[in-house]
Length: 185
Image (cartoon, rainbow, N blue to C red):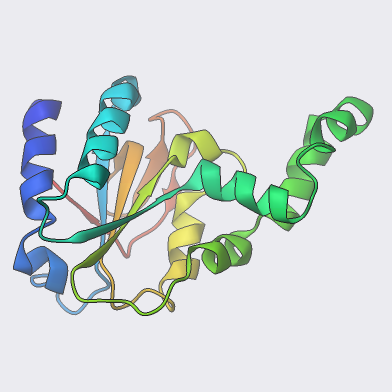
């Protein structure tokens, strides 16, 4: 297997290619790609994505959605961010988790991520997958995103593995079925 630096260099080139941007070679499937990496490489991945997002020389338009930041924004919109620690202390972690999953659900995430108009060359970059766990799971979010972003390639930076049928966050958690995406590099 290629080293992470080589894979990231290849990824940078690939996301600018006409084939990637147009979803060629996917047999009319949705253009969702997953870049899996070892969770121990998280800081390297963050540095890479930060540099990629600010790179003015790219021939594509990266639109990053860090799932943790989207989650925080949803909580701020609901004006609950300051109440969460108090409620957790009173009612426990499981209560907070249940409430957060109800409030910051897939629909709320998709609403935060929607933008218009979608332009040729746009690429949605999903980051913060591990940071947002357990509040949002990428396999269910991608299902919810499909109807709204079918014309835009989606690239997920995923700290774990995807075998073409299941995603396994951190290579430790129970695998979750997701078959609409493709491994990239």
